[in-house]
Each structure stands twice: as C-alpha cells, then as structure tokens.
Length: 499
Image (cartoon, rainbow, N blue to C red; front, side):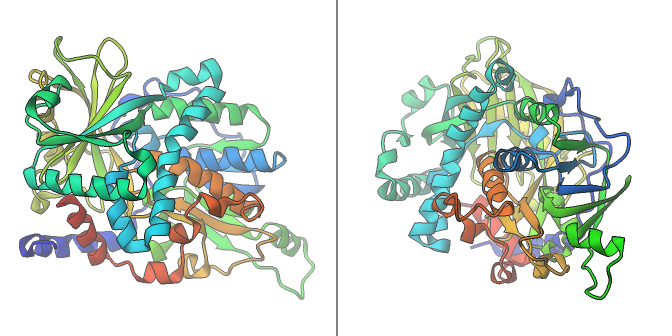
C-alpha cells in the first residue's frame, strides 16, 4: 500500500503521464556507449523510399530484432527503418548493459496477476534471453566480440532488513515452482560471506545467472550485417510524424486507389511520405505519440547512468560479475568493465531524493541530467562495496525508458481501439507494436522481436510461438488497456519500489 504522503505526490505526477511524449529531443546527453559512433550512425538514402513492405519506426534492439527475424522468415521483404536521431540512439544505446531477469523478485506478483501458468511462461521467456543473446553474439564470430556479451554471476545486494526478509520469501516462492533453478539462484547471508564477495553494509544478497554486454556495439554488429544486404533501408534523422490509413474505394480503379490497396498505410515523415503494408512501432516510451490511446498507459521515465572510475584496490571482476543495490526504496544496477580499468557502469538513483523532487516520471528529455539521481549515484560505490571509497564519476548521461500500467510489455497487433485507424485485412498488412519494457528491455526485446516477426508474416501458429511467447499476456487488448490508468500505474510502480 502506498503511504498517504506519497499518494498525494503521485496524484500530482499522474497528469504528466497523459501528455504526448512527442519525438526524441535532438540534442541528447552524450552516451559513453556511443563513442565512437557506428559508420552508419547518420545513414540515410539520397531519396526516401516511396514504397516498402514494412516500415519499422525506431532503431533499437526491438527494431533490429524484428527486422532480422522478418528477413529470416521472408528474405524477399523490403524493410525501411526510421530513426528520429542517430542509429541506436535511444534506450538501447544508453542503458546499463545488464542482461538480467529478476525472477525471484517478480514471480509472486506475476502469479497473483496472471495465474501460475502465465507467470511461469513470462518468467521462462525473460530467462531465455540470456541464452538467446549469447548465441546471437556467437553467430557474429569475431565481429560480435566487440559487443562484450558475456555470462556473469549477478549479486542483488539488499541494504534494508525488511526488504531482505521479503526477498528471501519471494525467492523461495519462485523456486517452489521452478525447482530446476535451485542451486542457480540462492541467498547469501553473513557479514564475512558478503565481504568475501566485496559487498559492504548489506543484509544479504541473491545470486543468480545473468549477463552483461555493450548493447550499442553488439546491436550495431547485427544492424551492419542487415545493411550489407539489399533488403533494409536505414533512414536516420527522419522523424515519423503521422501514420494514416488509406482504404481503397470500391468504386474507383485509379492508380492511387490501386496503390492504397497494395500499401494500406502511409507514414508521414520529416523527409516525405512512405507507403507500406505493415507499420511496426518500436519506439518504446515514445509510442504514444503516434498511438494517442496509449497516453497514460505507456509512459516515459528518464533514467540516469554514470561511468565511475574505481580505486586501484577495487577488484576487477567485470568479466564474471554484475550487481544490483536494493535499498529501502528503489535500486541501482551495476556492471563493470571486463578490462583492466575496472570502471563501474552504474545507473539508477530513482526516487532517492524523494518523490516530491522527481523530475524523471513522464520526462522524455534526455538532453538533461537527473540531479536527484546523480546526488545518490555518486555515493553508491562507497556505501555498497568494500573497496568502493574513492570512486568518482567520469561520465554521465540519461536515457528514456517506457513503462506500462501493468508492468508488462505491449507486443502484438495494434487494433483500432489503440490507433484510431481502421484495421485492414491481415492478409494485406497491419499495424504492430513492441514497446513498454519497464526498464528490462534486455530480457524482453530480442525474443519479442522474434515473436512479432512471426505474427507479421502469419507464421505464429505454424512456428508454435504461443509455446514460449506470452502472446495473450502481452497483447494490446481493449480489456487490458481499460484496466490501466495513470494513478493505477503510478501506485503500482511506487508500490514495487517500496517492497
């Protein structure tokens, strides 16, 4: 239950979520990950294509995964990928580098919300991403090594007694339904045991298998291979301003009408108009700009990231380990460079300055830093690690995450109740979405793109997608969206942060 004092603040914040998130700002804070930029960072055709089979709006992990899996299923497809800024400049190029599911923390709530069968499917889907991304990196060969995709032991250290006791109960409930995970996920207690792991001041830690990566480089390798083919056009600095449905008139046989029958959608951009059979929204926190019915249901949250230099005696274990620091309210996420520098890639700090100071909920301006988050993040190494004293911030930037009203992504076909546009015959085309990952895109996006590609090409039943993808739970049904509201979204969100 949210405390009354927090509830009043939440009520003031709720109005932000109803606003149009707009398109990405032009002058984002420079992300450490994006230096140096990819050769295709500013790529665009001399002339914008006028027709294509598929328009994908966005160029992050969801967009790249969807494009790759579409071409694996139908190599002849023509795809146009639109990006408002430079390629891979959104959350994928700005996140913390975690490939981390938190099944022990999420499973009980999922079970209460969806029931055991659905909760197990969602949890298994999230856990499957580590293997999937490791295998994709291997398939890239030498080129993929720059992405630093690696398996690590994750330690979620808890710095509040009540939260720790709750964490142990949640862990056991998860393991009761996933007995095969015993021995892989376990609790660690005792000052000496935690000290041996380099953790200070914690009541305990949950250990489990996770991954870490340099997502910008990793996804860039995949996108470069797609661009080397002839089927994908990347159009950066091209803002998608509107999507229109162009139904044919049955009494007309004009050339324009015939084109509308073959390409039932028009995407109006800052560089011209593209006709398409399918339009796929992979814009995460910005999706409600072109899909206004999602305002207050899919909303942005600005996250703060830092790179912190560590003292000489700080262990260099970034090739084998990652961390989370869980406080009485909120948590931080930490990976480490696998190189000799041992730099910490540390993000979070949300709400640590108090919700009344919050400037991040509903905020899509990543040209600005989060003051309250930075005040907290600069203190984390010294509080959380045995050898953290003396660490200092050497780089800082923000990125925009997308959160949904029920904590689960929106993946699937977009109906008229979402777009306001008439739907067309599925045999001809459609409008689709993959967005709203609640800060855990690295354990949602890649396989969501694979599932969405199967849906777009009509192979979802043939390929048995429902066996591993939470299609019903993630779909954009009218009933699901009706159960979301700004206040409910924020109350659930703040409730999660307090548990």
